[in-house]
Image (cartoon, rainbow, N blue to C red; front, side):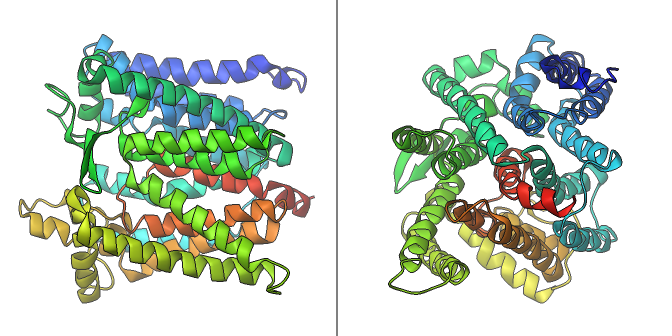
Length: 469
């Protein structure tokens, strides 16, 4: 292990870390020996947290892992004709993220923020719900989804440590996004035959859906938007829904963050990434981008000198009005055009009634698609298609309040510590994600939420750094 200060500044140090985590990941996918990938993730995290320059590559390595995790599982699992233990490998990005956070804390490079208090509330809610919990693997998956945003935010706060690092991170994120868009279009054209060559059957076996992708594309690769039936782009994510979150984060940050002096390049990149969202057919990504646009326009209006409102007042008024507009539109869409999305609206209505009847929760990993009931009515009334309703069913109202407080604290941290009024627009993102999770099941999963919260954390890094001097 390299020890000197000079040595840990070499670019090769990043390369060693990346090679370790990706090579052990690939070998594990080919052989089914998943312990190797876990050890590799731990060792790579130990190495990469010693980096003192270009620390944004710590966050970027996490972004690479969530972007290519399914490709590694699918392609190398296909090469090795491997299906066993692939489910464990879907957790490697999260394991790497957690180890990165732990090592940063142990090395005293990262101190706890205000968000730590609210995550403790969530953990208390989880502990209470575990007494009535389901099986171990499903419970761990729910715990992962409830805590991923915290670890990603904190690692982003450390590694994207100033405005220069934030701009650089966004720039390399955009390059990765163009790569994903290229392969997405290629796979959209090649369809099942091309996906089969890179192991789509192995990926959905790892997701706990054996049989999907064995003869044709899984059903989630099609949807209806305003009654128009479309084929959805999944790219190397192999998952159109979470891919829409990936592109929506790029579309938002590429426009707000001044990663280049060219306004035309920033705007054109945002437009191209928005086109990518449309190709995914992901309503979650569309909802987030639309909400941020509405909030930003309202904020600029209420911030006019002629209106005489403070920035924070303008922010909260814009947030409330944006939520009302998006909520009314969503209700209209649900009634008139829902199609396959109707399940989301049915879940919200039916699960809320269940939560009111049992306000302290039914236990972790209970209900939804974890339910043993074959009755679709029971599944829909226990949070099957809504992340927020699902957590409400599992943890109770106190759990939902703890989640809300976490996203509220992130919002307040950005408002207080933002790099400037332009970057204050990023403060709309946390509560937008919280609101979107009402209509989406995947919002809190690593592939969906990590890009957003890492970049939000990076936006406040300067202030936190000064505080701890």
